[in-house]
Image (tube, rainbow, N blue to C red):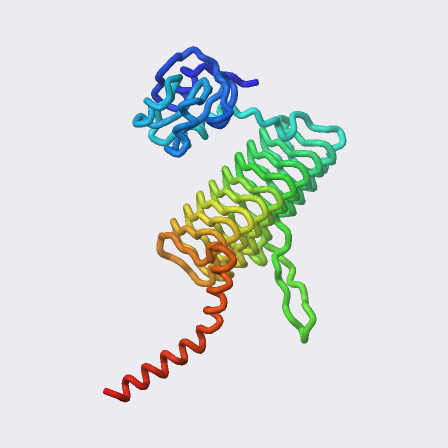
Length: 341
């Protein structure tokens, strides 16, 4: 188990320490569950009652809130961000692979760094490149000519097709599929004729891709995921999409082909985005938004209908069905008013 003194943690995250600098912290916990060897954070006045009873050995909070906790404290302008940094230091997540298993199948032409580790029954195909410090979990498939950058991790049973380039310090979670064919077909009198998808996928550095997420290869040129992008579980990215640096997409979002998304965008859960449109930098969509046109100006956009109680929903739906006749009546009344003038 990794453990640090409070003084060591404070120095590593550049936070002000109040309390016993020699107390040892070994893990993280919630305000309600934290024990004397654990750290938690306080960022919401709604949890003030819990903080007063908190048993944590260390709490990260703002200067204005320090009187709410009598124990050891780290003072931060952004407690959640500081907590994230401390949590990384204390991270006890086991390695994806700590040795190269004898059952791994590595093609003779593949270039694998001596300090990369490959789990049981993983397959590394011809001319693939696995750089230093990579961890490849059991059952992973790496296709021909694909490249995995230094320090990247691939969790079990993920599939990386051919001609995929993944940058440094990326995390690919279990069962993700990168480089599958885009949905390209031509119609011949009712029959669908497949169009070979001959592009690849290029993924930048520090990208995280969630479990069961699929990223299609490009039709002619690459699908591109830029540095720092975070993709949640069960997302679909279609062929030739481009996602700008440090954008984050939540679960069940789907992006249709050839759409370009700018930098620092956020998409909440279940957002659906049409193809061949452009989303500018710093654009944010709330949950279940249906994006059918380009949004180039920064801002927050919504289209999903928030849930209400069923009786109110049924009433509103019944009224909505009458909107066409209401519109016709309004137009008729407008005409009558004009004729009276």
